[in-house]
Length: 191
Image 1 (cartoon, one colour):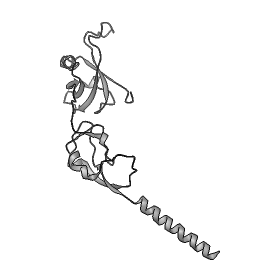
Image 2 (cartoon, helix red, strand yellow; image 1 turned 90 degrees about the vertical axis):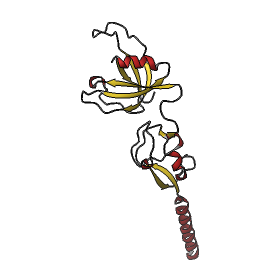
Image 3 (cartoon, one colour; image 1 turned 120 degrees about the vertical axis):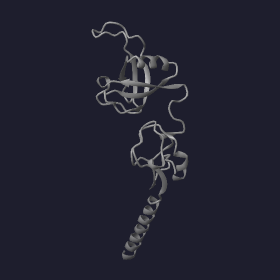
Image 4 (tube, one colour; image 1 turned 180 degrees about the horizontal axis):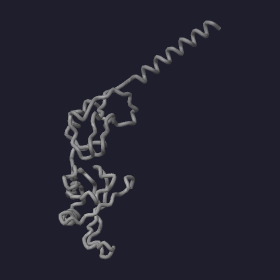
C-alpha cells in the first residue's frame, strides 16, 4: 500500500508538471498600448507585444506582423490591453469605396448630451422647412451615416463631426450641413 501511494503521488506530480508546461506555452502577439479611436491610423507607439497563451480558435495577430499593422486603420475603438485580431484593423481608411466624407458643424444645443464617438451610427436629417410649431415637412429623407471623427468644440461651442455616407447622398447632406439645417439622430449601437 505504501508503494502504491508513493507511485500515485509521483504520477500526480508528473501530471501537474505536464499541465503547467502545456498551459505555460505562450506566444508573442500584438496588443494595444494606448487608446485608438475608430478610423485612426495605428502607430508604433499604439502597439506593444504581449506573451500570452492563446486558444487556437482565437485569430490574434502575431508579433511578427507588427510592421504590417503599423499604418493600418482601426475598424473599432481600441483600448489598452486588447489583443489585436485581423477584424480590428484594415489597410484602407475612411471613406471606403462608394462613400464620401462630409463634415457637419453641430452647435452645442444640437449635440447629444452624451456626445458622439467615432463609430456611432446616425441619421442626419435635413430640418429645413420644419417650423417650431411642428408644421412643415422635412425637405429630405434622413441620411444614414457613420461618425468617423469628432473635433473639439470651438469658442462658440460648435463641434465639427466628420461622417461617412453613401456617395449618392453626400452632396445633399453637404448642402444641408452648409446651410446649418442638419439634425442628428443617434441610432442604437446594436442595430
